[in-house]
Image 1 (tube, rainbow over the protein chains, first blue to last red):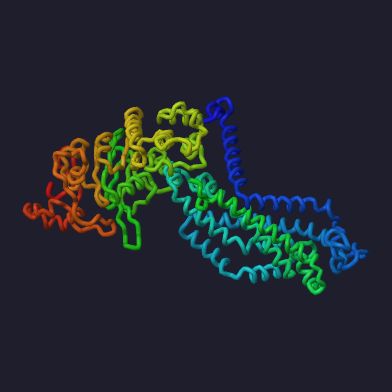
Image 2 (image 1 turned 180 degrees about the horizontal axis):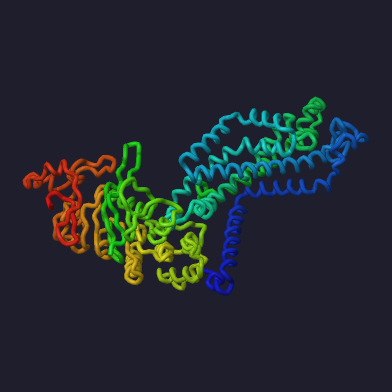
Length: 307
Length: 321
């Protein structure tokens, strides 16, 4: 087919496998680039990631604490003070927005990672073992699924102490069942494929079947699902923070909205207080969803229409 | 010498319509180094029988003896693992049987890795590929299944089985999903492997012509049971069971016999008729010949096994008993 494939002895087998992988990756990238919504989402996302990483350089964290902002005017509109004005305590909105993006993104990603971990393990185990193990695992999953999500999150968040880690935990505990069910369905479909039969006929153990055949063929779906779970996690973090259940010591977009609401920003017509976090959440969630949908279309065999 | 001995094998699947008796008391032997063709129409249980022999389905009753030793237990038990190495399978659909994310090298090496036969893996894989007609083997190492033709894929599957140096190869419709143009090549390859390595082969097929071309012996299966076994030329030239006769009469090449189109409904393995399981569709029974022979009562009520009628030729029919 190509020169280096025809001469494996010269290049080495491992290296060729690696070249192949890189090529597969670049093929996915080419297909991704063809999707306009996916690229828009990616650009928006990159902007926010850069802002989040650059927050310490762009805005001093002193702007977050009322104790260091006593000399600032309160309720200053963007035209009067700084890039984005101040709140009722004179804290700068710009600093809160930038530092808040860090928390929102971090919690979103960390909670998603934990969600995918629990969901994948449960889904793969249930799908692969079947029988009684599947029954027990799926009943537990359904039990979590039927509990109304927000009340459970609120109860958990108030029972556990209010810290960043607990917020992540709460989000993961309440959102893994969806992932588990999706992945179990995919495992059930992969399990019936011919190559799994062939591997079993070769005498492969369950561990071998799972690690060599099931997981590699479920992985793309896990990846696509991950990008679609991030916005849900971010929204959940915002919701919990808005309800005052977030980490009180850290600025996040949800906490900004909560404080704006408490301080009566709407009555003060201080739009600069609540619009930036609201817009930020909307854009980030939209960006992740666009990326996720574009990825899903490429990676999920059931959605892809390429023949 | 007898390599594989199947006795009274039953495989049943519970379904909503009731218990499906896919394999219902099969007796079968495969001799060392021979090619045995298992023929029958769709749904007669021949694929299930093949899958059960390689251990992909579980039998509820009966025994499988391999080289004189009974095969039982599953998974890691040492004898079972050994059996799984010595009995390999070739699948109907080579495209489905190869993981799209594995290179051809990985697909062929998989068996070696499963059985910890890693020493000089590369040489063994290259050897198996070239013996399967993929030459030079290095050219195929890094290709993915979708980059080669259907016939080449089946060669990869065969190489993946042969790399373990099995004693028995179970092939389930090995060429029915391939282009007519490459069927002959794959069959030739399989016949050649039998002749050069001494591996025995059980070929499941619905194609009597294929059985004629490749097999030394033929077993005919109907509704979960073997109804006739014998040397290929004997079974195919002078079939004794009415079902075999009907099967052969509809082969286009068979001009000298009158076509018999079987009457009655397609058999349902969830409701196997009492007596001889073939009697509701049996031309002998329907035409009244069975009545004249005075065996109609037996046909309706007595379930019978295989009985010898000549050297190495056994039939399950009241009219031949």
